[in-house]
Image: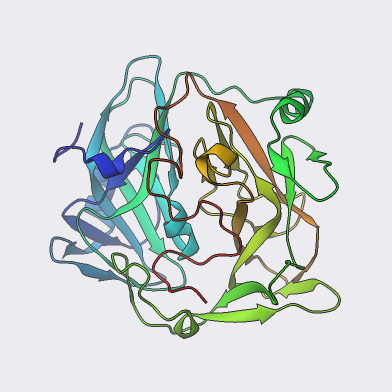
Length: 343
């Protein structure tokens, strides 16, 4: 259900884009309403001021905003919903989470939920100009979520390669491990680091901004290493090419303390067809949105930085990512968000 009719552009192969509503509430802090309260109950206590998004408003970095979404849910008793930021949102370091009434978890609506949806938005590096109708996150519906064992993933990979690496081996440990590429072929840039005090980014301006105003390119070095500075935001790429078969979806584990004190991804969902040869995506890499916590952290080429989890869909979608649906990141290598011109 939605305040306004669902648009065709919102429908993705296995998810639905969520649209911002007409107002944004600047709040004192991030929150979950808890099992006995609605989001509005908390907004009444925490709201500092209200902003009109119909003509656009600047959401400033470091501030927390709650935006009622145009869509709402009316789920059957055996269907739940999960959400994640869209790729372009993560690449701008805009931290976005879905909240529902009586929630004790972010990005989740329990089976049978009926009610409104809200987006928590925290621009972490760049201030953004947002408008009613902008799509920062997406939701997908689930009856069950089956987590494949490593043995099952290995069998699927042998039948239908899920990741491609030079030596044709994969690292299995609670999912398929992916590593960082600090020795890219055909390029002397291994990463981009966000510049502080950059201009505002209008979310609707595509292929518009000079990346030099927002990003510092980091050149390769003989040691194939990169030291992450705490608090800085980086764009890197995986060493592996990722492939998602037409009847599967994949998700990155964003934060795994077992591989280091850093976050590897903010928008780690891959629709069916991403990187799939018949959808024009052979050789597509995963772009990593990385922020180190607490202490400088040394990354080396080929170091495992996260895990990919695959899920089986109930059926193959009629349209695949990058095939009939316009996709900005099919066959990507190291790539900034769609708002920036190519380097």
